[in-house]
Image 1 (cartoon, helix red, strand yellow):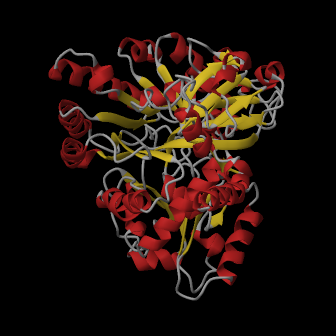
Image 2 (cartoon, rainbow, N blue to C red):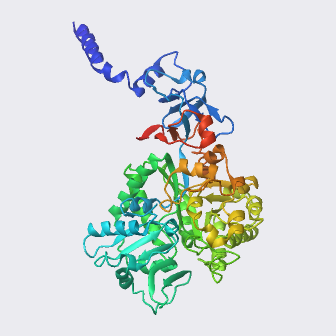
Image 3 (spheres, rainbow, N blue to C red):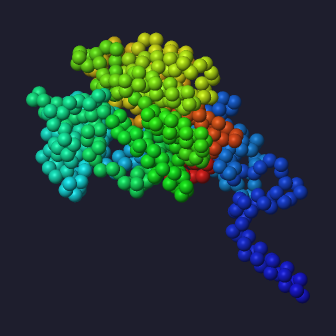
Length: 582
């Protein structure tokens, strides 16, 4: 009688839990493992089928199906060859023929600044002075007296080239100091109240590596270039820990909408700012997010080169990563400014300003010494270089460093990366390949510069030396694509199309069409080459067995049209095999 009661109770319990377990992956995995005929191969949690998968893996570039287990890729191939991995609890996604690619890796962002900018005055794309002023006026109407109005993204070339002045906004912001960064991050506009707060007057000398732009009477106009920006930045109240944490979450969610699953974060540091802010963001924001389970994209962090020994000590202590979410990349330095701010360093002067060759942001000898020591410690070094002279200078430094520290396989020890590499002198692309350098470039800067580069450099230099993507690649350099967000929008698919077509708005023909890339070139530069550039190619960058299952399903179902026109958008984004967007 007791036995019958136990059997009855067991049947009732089984019937009660059965509806909840039949769809549970773990339940069926356990059951199958207990059976004597259980398969030797692991079973899949997720199967993507009926897709056009571009893997970025040369051993198998295309497939129609992909199996995933515990956040990693099990197998990629045809659906027929993956069916043995499917069981009752496997989630199956029928992609309907849509294109699937590895999760995009943005090789150059300022992640927290991007998240903060989403809450500030957005001036990107503004092409009229009146609209510029209107947006600042709206912000002032919604701000408490005395609080700072912050924003950025403006590009004076879009409204004809005239630089904004403090006088544009003084009347509408009498009670609020204002700071608005140019789109390139190397120039900003302050109103007169902000200049007063910062003590910027007619008698103030320009700081090393920076310029206070003045009117004909010698008074500050409101515009500050490169290290001169620190005069204002030190007066702006520090962003709180909670604001920075919110910015990380906001930025990460935005990145996922664009298919970005990993970023190389260059940080909030710019010349003239305290180097400590990068380390404060590590402890206050990234470690907090990692330990509390709030990381939703992967980040590879870079730190100011002046702090190289601190990073070397940290890596020696904890290794090159904190988790599968946070990796330590290396150190970043600045050789020059930007083209938009006329502070990029060139061999020849700017065409419209014969006295201006650009700026050395860091003295060459100082940069050489820091790079030598960082390299000796095994750190990866990335140097911002825009102008042709700055790029030649950095290549000279890298060559000297390699000679001083000895010949070795630098792929495993250190890769010396040139950030931006926008304008190159004849022969420079060959040196990139000879030195096995990585060109971390941002295609959408091409679109921004197109409005002013011919005026600034002249026809010959603009046509022959700007954004030489194909020449760099054909000479053996690795291309790693990024956005420089919030300088430009974080949008890999848009950037890839820019690199394919090189046709700025309003143009009928491509800018130097011989430098156009293919779709596959662009995809690789945002995936496997970007992973290689930050030492993460064993973990991400391609849809290969054993790697983390970060992938993007696109809206297009025609690979041929995609390869021809470059048009597509993000349908959904997956991180570690889990749907992260939408």
